[in-house]
Amino acid sequence: MIYYSDKVNPKWVHGTLVVLVLLGLCALPVRAERMRVATYNIKFFSIRHSPCGRLPVEDVRTQGTRLEKLREVIRLLDAQVIGLEEIDDRQALEQLFDPKHWTLVIDDDSKDCQDVALAVRHPLKVRGFTPPNFDADEGNFLAAGEPDEFFPRRRDLLAVEVETAGGHRMWVLVHHAKSRAEGRVDSDGRRAGAAQRIVALLRDRLGDQPLALVGDFNDSPDDRALNILESGDTHAEALMEDEPDTFLANLTEPLFAADRVSFGRNSANIDGNRVVTVAPGTRQRNFELRHTNMNTGDLLFDQILVSPELAAAYVKGSAGIFDQPVAVRGNDRDRASDHLPVYADFDFAGQPAAVSASMVPAIPVPTFPVRPVVPQVTVPSPVAPKALAQAVVQGAEGLRIAALLPDPEGADEGHEQVTLENTSAAVVALKGWKLRDRSGKEYLLSDSVKGGHQLVLTLPAGTLSLNNAGDEVVLISPQGQERQRVGYKAGQVKSGKPIVFTIP
Image (cartoon, rainbow, N blue to C red; front, side, top):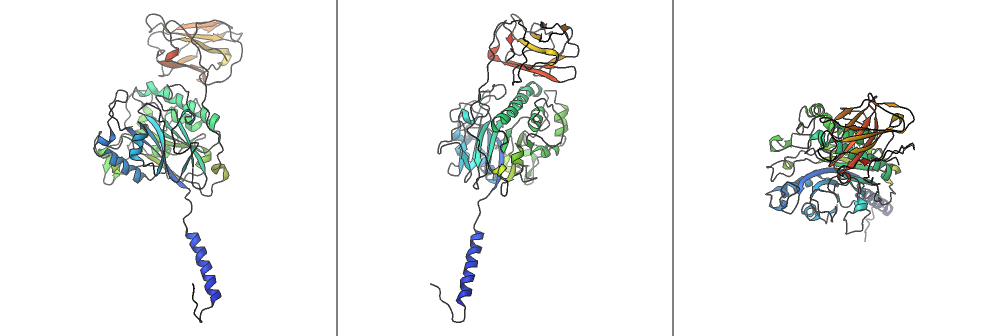
């Protein structure tokens, strides 16, 4: 009950109360539409003592103070969405992320120790799952069914739709590219191949949806794989460039232009209360050694790329590398990780419907035709082919790769073969044409091929070689243009049997 003095006008009191109530309502917290997205490779994060490939893995709970350091990193990072790499299983994740406050998406059925995962902090929602089950299956991996050479182990590009409290939706895709452990140039084709497939998959599956592609790319923003993703040009090469990106905007590219790194830092790089994330000369050195297997030192492997539809919500200049000392303090056994988290901020408040609406159906599991391994044939193929990933694309003047023989009977070196076919009626001169394998080795062509005929080339020792574990061969025109790219996997290689590439 309100009591009025005889000296106070009751109408004035009522009006004041209404104003105070309205002011109070305005002061109520609004649904936050700002979020931080991060990527973090935690390096063999497990609660088991078991090897991961050839490397030993220890239970994180027995690694001294490592788990406590990781928890502190996550607290200080203060991200709402975190793409994670090298995760053993859900039980390990729950040691770091409390399920009461986080939604954890991971493939529970995978037996691999290097899974990708996504942690989403409440109140953000994860769409496409029925709580409390957030077990990712084939339909949640954009590259399910793709060749293992491009997406090794179970790193099949996890794709999850996230919704803010205000109803804005975006896709977060977690990628972990093939490492450089086998040699940088020797493994470059696998990372570039993955990038080419990602471009095709994004165009085919997600169209113009707002999305963030995050992860450990094992390449810098100047390398071939990242230039493919940034430009959408599957023929892009390694290039030091700072031009605006036309397909996916690499938010972390300006960091690398300033020689900032996210991989390889340790306790020796702590200066006061910060980790020094600048490695002078790293960008130039990485580019100059691009055609070698030499170690280029610490690099920016962890990156965040976004579609134009999401770029509108990016808080400019917010991309950064986590530099709190807790992230690198300690030795190789009890250090949080050999990677630093990389992050970027987004603000969806006031964004147009194009950013807030996402009515994408569940991602279908892609299917791809498998080329059978059959004996070589010499039937002319005059039908014009269609452009398909890893299928035949007819070269200029009708020249194409018809077959490869990676495993001839007896010794391989000096006996492997490439069969070229001319599907046109005219003679094709081969001078100026060349073949290139995945490692970058080339073989210059000569001679000519009659119309409607094939030419079998035996590769001399020391030129390009056809790896029995899987490889690819590119046919390059005299103008330096890629005219055809064919590839095969280990399962297609049979002793003495050519792998035939037919025109679809």
